[in-house]
Length: 206
Image 1 (cartoon, helix red, strand yellow):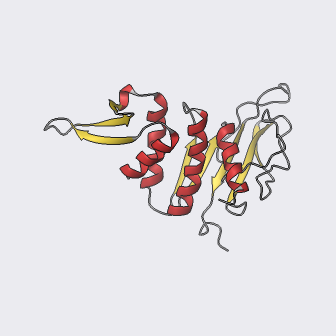
Image 2 (cartoon, rainbow, N blue to C red):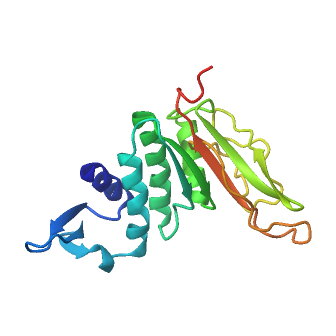
Image 3 (cartoon, rainbow, N blue to C red):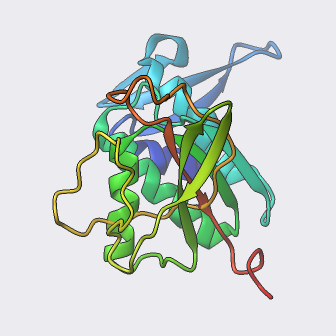
């Protein structure tokens, strides 16, 4: 698992590898993050590393067939790391049959998942993208109509992510949380969130 987590951090540009080291002869251990020849305690590196580390650990350690719920896993990550995180979700879900239910505000994560669709690294049959919209006192899940090139046909009207005419793609799966307060009295507000769900063939067999 350490190798897999280290490989994920390396792809994100956050670390070369991680190491668990015992402190003397005690029963205490420390987690070291290696980057560019420097080994630092997890407490002394960027918050993004500490935030994404549990995400990767869970992804690679849960039993096959598990479902993992994540709320804004992109927090404190730079754009490239957010995009790579989307790739890792898609790969882990296919290789380990793990289903991810992710709530996100990240355009970088969203766009990379669209790119994966365009590259045929996932399909619309394996993923679902939803927009969470506030309607009165209720939060309503609005499925996004996404073609095989990752293009969204029913783009939310008040979304600040304006489509640019290209066909990106990503691997979404399901949505599980509510809205952030978008109301009719605030037409310029950012939409609540996008959610996506990674599906395994087992989950969708009929």
